[in-house]
Image (cartoon, rainbow, N blue to C red; front, top):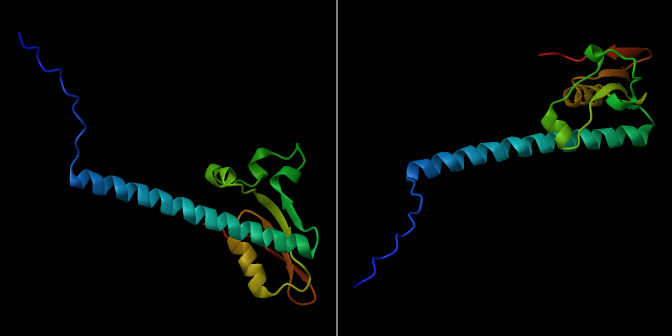
Length: 129
């Protein structure tokens, strides 16, 4: 008596359209992650520049524990996961130009930025969307 053939394993089959959708979703996700990584890298480079100019960067961790949570600056979970830290205050060097101050405002929208353009120090408030 002939033995019946064992059942063959059926492989999952998908169409070309499914492949294109999956590749598109993965590409968008990686593009977003790379954009976030680039932004974190730019923030870290600017933070290093400030440290070379003097101790003028104050992070979220430096705030006293009695500070209300509503006043503490926040950044997204993904940025923290990539190694970023929220800034609550930046003191720019006295010789910082207007372009450097605007760059600080772009990179650290959650922080209060103190800069000097002429003879008087000026507080530059972050722009909130």
